[in-house]
Amino acid sequence: MRKLKSRLGYTVTELMMVVAIIGILATVVPTMLIQMQNFFLMTSARYEIQRDARTTLDTVNRYMRQAVATTVVMDTPTGQGPYSRIRFRHVDGRYMEFRQQGSKLIQVIDTAQSVVSNNLIYIAFTYPHTDDTSIISVSITMGKNIQLGRRKVLELTIQKIRVMN
Amino acid sequence: MLVILAIMVPAMVLWIQRETVFASKQSHNTVAFHLAEAGVEKAYLYVSLSTITWSRIQAGQAQTDYSFDKSYNDITGGTYAISITSGPGTEQVTIVTVGRDKYNKETRALRVVYSNAIFGGNAIYAGRGVQIGGQVDVEWGAVMSPYTIDAGGRTFPQFWSASQITTKDTNANPPNCDSPGCLQWHSYQANLPTPPTIDFDFYRTSAAATMGCFTATGTGSAVNSCYFSGNVTNWSGNTRGTIFIEGDLTVKSPGMYHIGTIIVMGNVNLPNGQWGNSGSPGTSLRMPTDAWKQYGNNWTHYRDVFDQTAPAAFPGLTATSYTSPSLCVPSPCLSQKVAVNGFLYVGGNFNNGGGGGGNSDIYGILYAVGSATQTASSQVTFYYNAEATNGLVTTNVSLTRVSWRDEVRGWPSGL
Image (cartoon, rainbow over all chains, first blue to last red; front, side):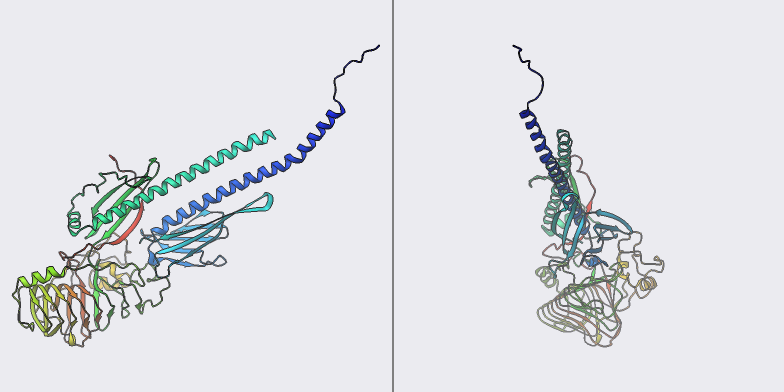
């Protein structure tokens, strides 16, 4: 009797299992990758605008504290949000300005301009106490669009600053 | 998949680490700043502790624990150090503080200047408003009041009010100073300095102790201090020292001339412009070195009258390249008719609203608790005398913040 010799190969069952696993992976992995990328983008965007908000407020705070209170003027630049510009004279005599220009926050020192942030959605300068012009409230909303998923992260910060001069 | 994960996960970890470093650095920086601010508060309390402390600082004495010789660690989060020195101006102190977080990674420094210049460069301070009109001018020093000031359209000196300044600004909405540069008037100022508390008991006692003055009506000539328990209704003559009047003071012809301090607890009335004594000797006036700052909106007046060698244009309030000459020449600085050469305190209202009666000058400082009305039709000129309050005895040190600024500075060596 001829003995059946074992041959290398896969059973149908094995093949079906492999195909099933590949199918599952093919279905799940792209979704996972997209989610991971979204997560990465969201996280990085969130950190970025949080850092932006922190540094922006730090910069605005530092200069506005050294402003001369009587020289402070808050107004609305053409085409921008209400009271999104503040102008004042620094205690050392320099002219200073912070203003919104689209999604940018612009700082002006004398005639030199620089961009403080590229993620600005909204900024407004107000007097929280109308009888005390040495206190100024700054409200900032930073935002960044995420490419995938068309989602947006937002960071809203409000700070009161005392003008010291 | 594993390859992608191997790329993304370390990238995220690195990203987060970097953000953490940023956040941590900013946190340390903020802590250092708050410590520096705490140092300013501590220094402020120390300086305002007593008039004796103030005098010692003004004399240039180094203050133990306040000369960058001690590291304070009474506040969690780090340490701070303090330096207190006199200057940069007279009756001023400069406080420099450095804060450092507990990890010694961030330092922040603040430089704050406080003034106890009694009236902070003001020729006239009136608690219930000031009216400048007629032929009255104020030179070399500012006019200040927590109430309305009627500047009468004047382009000098500086005017400071916690309310409106008539003809300049009657609207509380900013801007509340002249443009550009806020050189002359400042309206709706919430933080005007608190006037000093004069030690009346001291002056009562000293005025009464050296009696040499004239009769109760105030007629005659006195060379020493005087004390009056009631009204003085017909004052004229030449006097010096300390005059203390519990009631009102009314000056009559031919007017008065006083060198020193006059304290009137009631009102001062100058009917029909009777003030400067025609027999008063000529007085040499010493112009404060920063008198020129009062003329940012009328530099021509300053150049024409006080210093024809001054720069052609106003140098700017922060300029250090120019100082006023100490001796004021030419005329009218050598006045022939001076009413007061010193400090005049009025507990009630000061009224110089009369008509003629002759020109007269005042070389000093007027502090009226009530209103100060200056509308005489005769030429009356207030010349601010920065030295008028030298030695003025007060019961408190009333500090006014002159400037506050961030400074780039490391931790003091040796601490």
